[in-house]
Length: 376
Image (cartoon, rainbow, N blue to C red; front, side, top):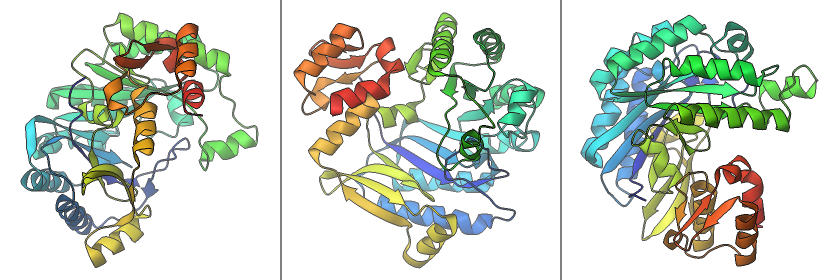
């Protein structure tokens, strides 16, 4: 278990359209004052750099929203300021999320020049019908062209797919995964479609307009995913993320290993060390509210909460058991109930060897239930 590192998350809240399944903090806006947003992101970064325990950054992640709508000058400015205020570890990972539309893909060269060395593309599906259902603005040909362009410009790239879509069969999903592997590099993320509160899909689901696969079929789709991707040399290192060994997302590993990370931008969360303790941070969620606060006081922080040792332990369990590697027990500061651990070991859902606490493949498939049982 290596050092989890220190990450910087930068949230860009704007999209061209709101996907019906998305519950992220994203907003459609016809006009964005890029220069004002650049100044605000740099101001908040400066404010936090003076407050947190400093250590070299191992990663930056531009998320959203649609960060590929950011001016490359803004991306470059944030990377430069992060380096000057916090410093970089050797070979930092700098990721930008992008939509695979041709207009945004044409900007890849500029992002690479700005310092981005990894992109994550929201492909989501490889057939026209499901892309339209998911509200995506690209078609399969455009998506695969963007993947190819990413491979040309960036040392590392990844793309996302969503499964358990209405009417999806295991056979069709297997074929789609095999097609995806023909274009994948060393990393791919695969997420199960869920109906999130407050989304357009929830409204349609409640009206009976859409139906998603039941638990049994969703389980079969998950198992097919693990089989095919592991067989292709991309085993799951986390529930939804697959990579060749050594090609894992270092930024996301910081989250799952519960390392410190600073979050700036509307609605961004963080876990930082200051004043000798761990703090949870949250920025104002609404873009205009956040922007006004930064203009007025130099930051858009809405909440700072000191984490108790027990809160920290629970978070480490919830995040770390997502990982195939598990959690070193000396990081936990206390194990869950021995009887409950033993019962999960007996059922084949948990490995507990005195040094590492790790969910098995079957346990990760049922992680929500496993965590409820351990933490109740």
